[in-house]
Amino acid sequence: MAEPWGADPTAWVVDGRVVHVTRPPLIRLVNLVVTHTPIYVVFGSLRDPADEQFLIQQILDDDSPIENDFLNDVADELVEAWFGMPRWTVQEIWWRVLQQWTDIDGELQMRGVDLMALPPARATNLAKAVLMKFASGSDDRVRALLDDFTMEPPRIVRKHAEAEGESTSESVEAAAYDFNAAIELMHQIRG
Image 1 (tube, rainbow, N blue to C red):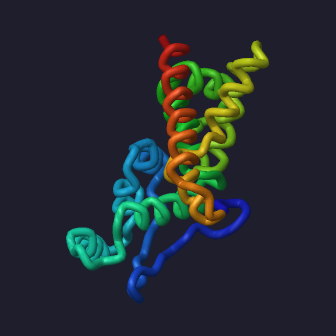
Image 2: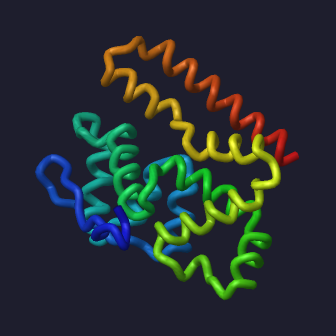
Image 3: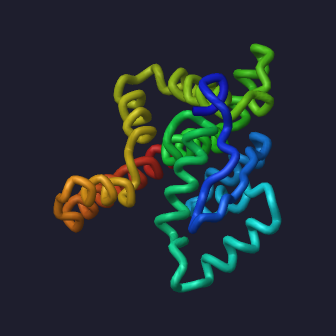
């Protein structure tokens, strides 16, 4: 996990090659994480230009083990190490924070806290706490918010189902339906 629980990741390995990474500053890191594709997290955290060239070549090579699932796994691991929680949870928190930035920043600035000056895990924990505080007037809103934070995307549900030997088509379809229903509900709530 990220500070204070442990050290940031410094590298990962693919096909015997060590690919070095560095954690970008929080503002840039949040921008990388909130995208729907893992490519931004993976490429945005590379330390060396030679690793970037290597990855580009590998992605374009049909025989390479680097594909979207692999990039998702790398991005998931990096984000979890930096933020101390799953990538989809971090995304949901920061999507909401960015939508309510003036309120959240104002709330924290009144208390002398610069959210963007904190390490990623602390900033995200604090942002989540403020979001929970904003929702605290209604048990239903709190429950819905917690559900949104913990709902795994269909690709993760599929991975769990495959690991447990379940029929993936039914479990993925059910998860996709739940995920799409949650997104639709979120859009209705936001107006």
